[in-house]
Image (cartoon, rainbow, N blue to C red; front, side, top):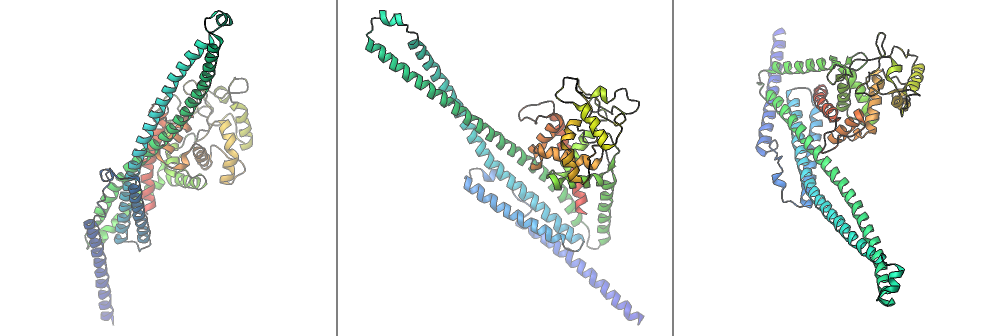
Length: 471
């Protein structure tokens, strides 16, 4: 009986190894066929789209979008399969294909935008010429008007002209006045059209920047995923244990990312996994991307370590030389806001001691007094606290509570346009969050460093989030 059981067990072991061998073979065969047919060698250059009409470009874009939808569906199917190397290879292949198709779609979009940008640039140039021609015509009409208008009654009486000639001049004068009004209307209309065209042009240029940023991100993603794919494909069929090591390494990386402390300003640091959960909750309410929101907080935490000047550390703590009365505008400071009165009201609502709460110090000759990880000044927080309280389910929102601060920042960033999720929308929202002004295209305002820093943070954080999501 024992011998029979052993033989059955041996047979089952051989059968399982054969199934594993067969599954690996199928995966390798699928990958080879896909590579041969060109599924992983999609042309992502714009050369193939040059000379296409708008209708042809649109048709090609729809074809690519349909293929990408199929790749998304395929990825979901793979994720429902039992855990194993075949599943992971299938998921990676689908993700790589999606990324390449996304690059192709954005390349087509850039081609479409390029044509539109060229047309609108020409339109603006034409309108500017119309405005200039209108100005010349206006100057000529004004000269004629002044010439006719200069006749005095004495000149009329003493002139050798007869009255009928003066009536002709009068008729000319009326015609010139009508022409002046018409020319002014033409110039106003041309200016209005020019402003509209410029707005459309800036919108198209922003969308082109977004598309190029997505292409850059997708290419980096493809490089990482193809490296991981080659690693999985390189695992020998007889080395199933090696794959288990890959899985364990992923789990260890995820655990390390979750437990790593995420620095927050003016409060205790929290685990990254907790910060991410706050950011994802905020995304459900506001639509702001978690990596971007975390990037803002990471930028804010950097401001306290001495990287960006004198606005480091905090004020108003026991032993600090500056208290809240020294750093906030009050009712007698001739400021557009009264933070002192609002701050005291907030402290009463929260039951906190106003003389011990950490606050930001003044920077660059301005006021300080910003509160908590999100660095809201009292008057701004006062305008948002009820929305935040409803969103997190409390009676009074606390700017020093990380969960409340995350929600408040997400709401504020959404109000500034970040919910759109595009590169330019998020970058401009970050700059506005910092200084009130967008990262103006074509210029280098002082706040651009903040927007660029946030976007770089978000790029790095998104990679960590992707690792967590892959487990």
